[in-house]
Every structure is written in structure tokens, then in C-alpha cells.
Length: 201
Image (cartoon, rainbow, N blue to C red; front, side, top):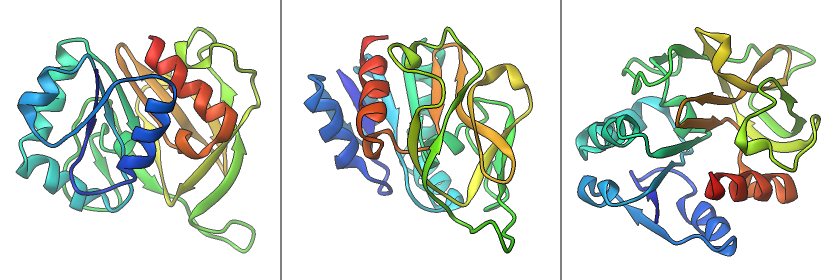
């Protein structure tokens, strides 16, 4: 069972549909007790960092996420769900979950660089052995929609990068924790393959 955390923000159902099309059994939940019963966890998200952090804490989900990760359950953060894994964000003042060391920073707009970063971009693999990359080739395209990017404290957790005025961590991997800044559920064949690989980890 894959638990999809519902904290009132994000594209919950598109992620659920994509996973179920691939044959996964899913449970959309905002209950810490149900999260404990799931073998894998997905934290999706679209919206503001502070609002999300407040909702996670208010619903007791922050503690449930940390417990699941400590129990070595496979965890995937998507977009804002990835950013929440970090210590803090320039988007707000609330602390993140502090699972991965680093902060979330805003892209600097310019005449040649529009913010938010929206559209297709390529991935450059850093961790060749990352299970999410099985069956994929370096340089594959995925779909982004974000104004903020994760700046990791330790580059060893960067599994893949993308470039948008600067090179940033597009995928992070730390033990049983994975995070993707793009939307795999909107990234056609590549995104579906990444989700399938996640199911099979």
C-alpha cells in the first residue's frame, strides 16, 4: 500500500491516478495512524511553503512523516513535497521537516529567465545507481512548474540536476528518501517510468 499524504494542498488525485494506472494500491490519507500502515509514502504538493508546513504540523503529519522515514519506509516527495524535506525556504519563515540538509531558494528573474520555471527540461544524472533511473537515459525530459529550487548542503544527496540559469538539484536521494522537483505525473513516459521504478523499489 502506498500512502499519499493529503494536507489540503496539491495535485493529490493526479498522482493517485498515475500510481493506480501502474497497478499500485494507494490510500489518500491525512491520518497519522493510517500512514503507519502504509509500506511507502508519497508527499505531493503545490502551493506555498509556510501554508504547507502549518498544515502538516496542525494535522500531526510532520511527526508521522519523520516516523515513517525513521522506520526506513520508501518515501517520495514531489515538487513542494520535496521542498518540505529541507530545513527552510526563502518562500516563508516556517521550518521544513529537516530530513535533508539545505534550504530552498528563489530563482532570480532576468530578461532571459522567467520565473516561475515552467515547461520541459532535461535531467543530468549524478547518481548512476539511483533506482528511479532504471530504464531511463541521461538527458531525458521532465515537466517543471516552480519558482523555488532546493539548494542542498551536501551534494552527495543530489541524484540528478537540471539547469535553469543555474544548475540545481532536480532529484535528491538520501537512504530511503527520494525527492523530485518536477511533476512525474505530468512528465509523460519518463515520469511514468520514474513512478513505476518507485513502486518497484
